[in-house]
Length: 229
Length: 229
Image (cartoon, each protein chain N blue to C red):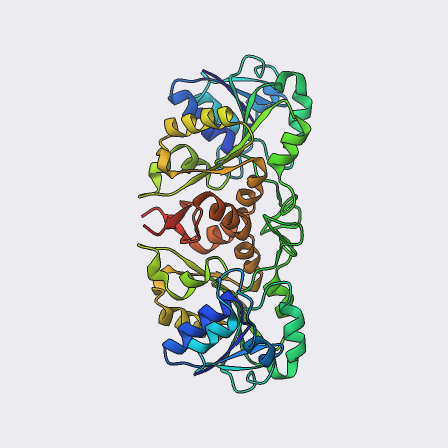
């Protein structure tokens, strides 16, 4: 299966490397591939420059936004939440028509420092904004409620813990759930919250997530919904 | 210890009955005690009229707003989020000075139907609004992230699950944590998120909580933060 990952930051790198390791045909898309390949300053989240990371992952295609989307069976939005709508507009609705778009971004606004605010919430969400702007695209929100490595290696956290799925298209959600299974998510730990407006709820988990990160001093945790038997 | 519970809805009833059962000296406060005592229409959340509930709990004092606050060592805000600031203003800052106020309300706005919105979030919270309006009161936010019965009987949910605490005053938080212990909360499952602004995070858990309630068809669940060992 051909998969396009939008974004080359920590999340894009982590997802792309895992997908490649699982045998998928992965392309990463970025604004300017040559510039990205030559980037020597360390990524603030990973401490590693993209150029160094890419030396170890040169089997992943790195192309300009829109170059690999037409052939992709699944597109993953791993851009920063503040850039997502602009990047998707650059790619254009024609190329995104009928595509399943897995949106894992969060609309975090760091402009006022830490902790960040959400640039949209409560009565709307980034996922809904994307779905509204690209009505022919099948947007599925998932994986946005945890650190990148846990998204693709849920076994890092012992025991049961959850990943949420929101979207209007049932077949698109099934495709995403299958991908989650391939990352190691047990089906009983995947919670389908309903239509894309339920992404408001999962994007609004970020403020407590940021506080927990501060309290614990690490990001190796995840939400688990504990139920009565 | 004398405790005043503000509000006579499902949450106020559940908290008051549990506190009384634990041996605390509990007063419930409401706008018009006589009117409340004679209320014969069923509470939409419990299905039981207040007059019937009170027949079984007539050992709990029911007084007008402000009548028991001065003698109380702890005041619990169990009013609806939309009414909280008005009720507290009615009681007045003089009576609330130096009091520990445990705020368990959520600023849910049901005026547009289900699911409700938050009337304040992201850059502010109900708890912060209360703290700002009553700077001499020691506001502690807790228990607002779960159904009323689970607040006071955490053993309903098997295994470990969490309750969050936010507040600016360390001694006030200690007093609340001790109360949580008496309800049955293990200290290791109580997460201190920091100052009162961290209540934004827990109030913003409500949108996903409402969706989960819809998905499960019951409210017997709670958040557990699962960590790597």
